[in-house]
Image 1 (cartoon, rainbow, N blue to C red):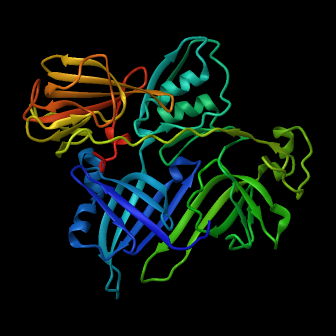
Image 2: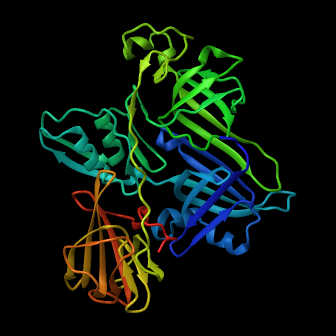
Image 3: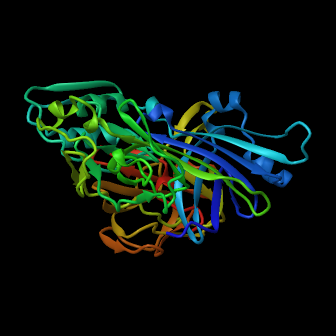
Length: 456
């Protein structure tokens, strides 16, 4: 790729609206992603935004900590020309605007944290004979903002009845021996001798390597021109003409993007990658391969200096489906005050308010396995099975409808009108409640994990 014409896009999702900020607005960002999930973070600075935009983005740290209903989310993309890559997805920790001393620029700073995987709890018992992969997928279904990525060679089954009780992410790592990490909302498990099977970029003196790679313990640090396509767990090939003792292919275990993208200011755009070179270290070959490793030898394709690598086929990204209806997002997914009792309850979907009779469309292809009046809570209801998405069963549920345009057992296609908005069941006015459920146990997830707010 020719590294010119850098571009970016920052999308801020609030409970009521979506704000998109793009080049040529000046943007400075630092993104750190790592196999150590607690080290993953993002800081974005946007220059001279309109006051209305600054007000939308503002997030107070204290209210954010105690009121999930106030949470806002950020999606940062960047790249070259028309090719933008997702660099970070997460929740705003705090956001504020200020002027630095002696400067006229108004800087809006957004501190972003990854979707909080550490708040999710698991309490499950698996019978003897349950495969490790089935247990893995069952526990992973408890992580509402993660999709399952690469599982790798996780083989075997439980010899006795086994219980997992605690933080879901920690319990999964007990099962996998600490080989699980979350990168940009994707839950991956790859063993020491595995990498994610994606194209291997070659970084050399003529392709963006900015300084001689530096060894730090069991790791190699390589600084290069901004490389937006990197993901954790893939291979990166180093080809330095100055210091060739570390030339070869290595697994990426972390990186930091540090970029300024502006139409008016000059600045640097770099990526500093942390690479795993443990197989090169004295004695490391004994535990890894039981073969002697020759330090400094040329690295064969698909190997990390004497260690055989097993490519892991990546899964498709989570699809983006359409919005089911036009209208106002009157109640988001998450904690809220119940409209009837006032008590704090968890809203297991989203509400879209509009006039009675507003068309409701299927968000994706599937089979409507239930169409009818369900109960006094849901009223007129449609349930659609969308089949498997990345190996997980996904269903959508539409409630409070005024009427139907399909029948039970009917196949539906994305965008097909399936019913009409109403206020049947336990409802305060004309609106659609949409929920999305994953897995055999039917765990509810934020519908915007699948739905693109801009598509109808």
